[in-house]
Image 1 (cartoon, rainbow, N blue to C red):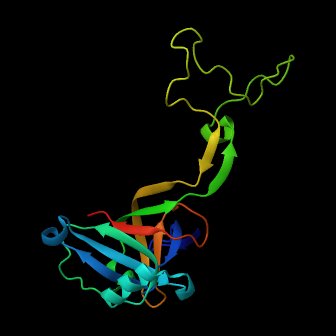
Image 2 (image 1 turned 90 degrees about the vertical axis):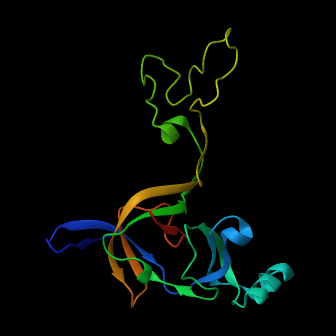
Image 3 (image 1 turned 120 degrees about the horizontal axis):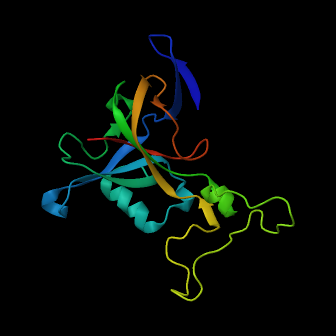
Length: 197
């Protein structure tokens, strides 16, 4: 993250997202042919050595250069979009409200205090339970741990959508989008920026 100043001189915390013009329409899904409207978007340059034959044939059939990532985005209508069309930051303007989808940072196996914000147990008087789980429910009835109980386990590395973030600035010449607030994932991670409509 970084910060920029708005017209009133207020500091705005933003996350710059490099969009560029690498995003290309690979295929169109229409209600008539597929039962729903969607665009299949490709992003990034693919490593041709790692491209298998079916995917190579798929891109050849579409007439589009192979991309590293393929993602399908559902829409109300795909009119105005064509296969091979490049999409950039010019789709957004300051003031737009967007949803950002990404993969959060993976934190491995974590205890309940770190994962769920539990309080610790007593630190003195011979207590042996500082960061432990403690009671997980009654023993006789129901006789098992109820589903949904907060327990230690895998923390992070999950798909998360941060909703209603505001576009603060758009720099088309650099292909950069400045979004107010934080987005999921570490530096350099791929994210999906969707309009709220």
